Length: 70
Image 1 (tube, rainbow, N blue to C red):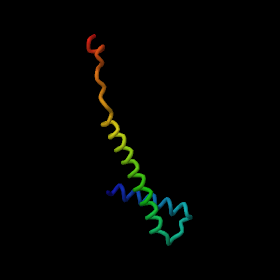
Image 2: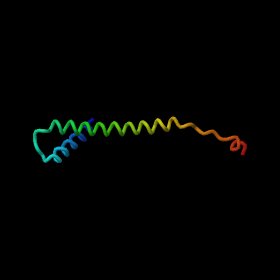
Image 3: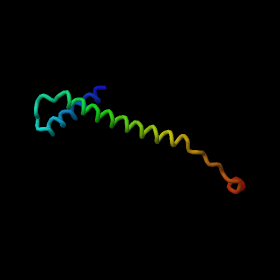
Image 4: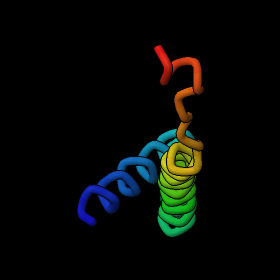
């Protein structure tokens, strides 16, 4: 949880720097950073979940009769 907050804080800081270090938009920077970080985290989790579920669904191959006879 602290890593998440730190990532948001750093991204908000970078957004502030990109906008010329103007004061008064801290909340907007924080919310934009939070949205970016959480969206990125969720998409990463989704791709991991999709990859693991596709591995589980792959059918196991059975040895053919010829292979068993050999």
